[in-house]
Image 1 (cartoon, rainbow, N blue to C red):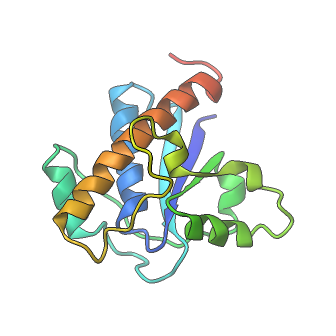
Image 2 (image 1 turned 60 degrees about the vertical axis):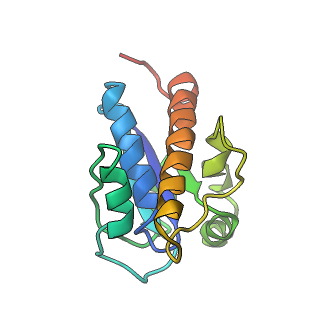
Image 3 (image 1 turned 90 degrees about the horizontal axis):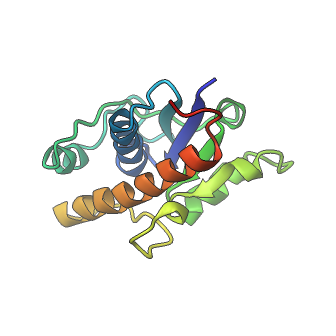
Length: 162
């Protein structure tokens, strides 16, 4: 049974699809595609069905990555479907946990920046209203966090590593 990760931001067109695509890139490089599955979602319904933001895909393309996906909204069922749910900021974290009134799944919800090893940020900033430098910064930050996350999963969550 593969380990399942869900990345969550507000609209699911900038930060969470970037994290999903970066993580999939790292998983492929590590030859772990059969063991780790990623998805992303937004806490809002603003952009359901939309692809990743063109500014985010341009920043990724400059680094040799292709971003794919379609925005969807976080659902209560996601608590059961995923082993780990990663919030991009504190507001996303609170919004996710507000759907878990009994606190049954709180142990599955973490902050994305908790896995950073180089950056000191506590939240992934939303680049939506900024310029290209914001998108580049978010990709650098998420690359750091995803590398830390992959090391954590390989060390603590996978039953057997090929």
